[in-house]
Image 1 (cartoon, rainbow, N blue to C red):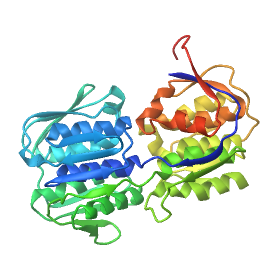
Image 2: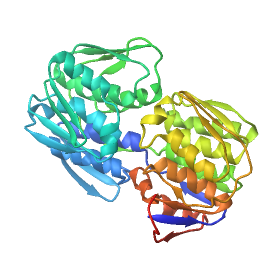
Image 3: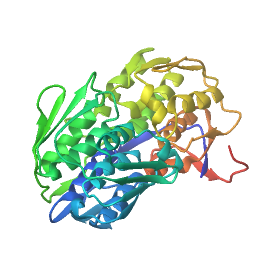
Image 4: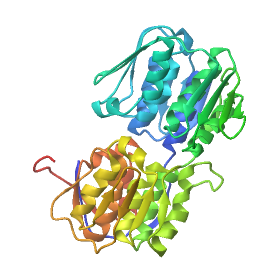
Length: 406
């Protein structure tokens, strides 16, 4: 899908979309519960559909009616040979691997080549130490081994998705467990979202101290729950206000544990000057911070290393596209400098890098200059009705035919 954005301002009110992070967590809890759960306010993004497909492969029965998903849970310990289609969802893959290891039957998790490039070192090391099969290729990951409870030690600066995956599986081992995080703990807010979801399903889990999680053996109880709305994707809507529009994003819980709610404070800093902003607990905001820094006063982003292993290498991808606007960006190992300069209309098409957050960041900038974006369909990964919503805000765009590939 290729779109041309015309110079236009976003004006009006729009409800924030459902949280993809919480939808993953609630659906997995429902898939592990003994009985029928109902999860409301679920957006059918590609990542969420991947998690639903994987739950079905594990044996859960899942039906979708609009934004309501009904799940009859399963016991993954009883799983026979299975293939789990993770599409391009890193969250799905990392959440599912420990669940697959609850059964001693072989299992293969498939996905796109880019997904298979993303590191799974934590699980590879665990399987190697236990003598289990962990075979990775471009086609997928094949596992065979049986996870037991006990004491685990992980680096605190790894993706929280590895920690979440273990947190979901360990209660079902029949043994109490601990996970000790060494060094600086990044993405703590995502871990806390996982704890919140687990407790909702009746799992006893908590921080024993600042670095150690205690997980009691237990069973998941079915629930009727509603997914909260998403601060992360809300930032891409609120960005139109920073660029001269007047958009009100509704439906966000001010008491949410989502780390990405920091964007409201950080947007104020971007408006006021050239701030230094850490992405330690909010890596998904990196692309929109780069875009807003380019449009406003510049910025310095720190703790950016994990941008390399997202759907694209987001620092490099944004630097390439911002150059088309005439903006200079310096990407280093763990920091990114975005220089402020007057935006130019891109003389060549912009490219979405198969990354939903890159596309939405480029759309925001194109409302100032106009421009064509190729590969805009990537928004379906997390925000399938994004283009419909921004049209309601007065953002002018149209789909155009491709005249070549990037």
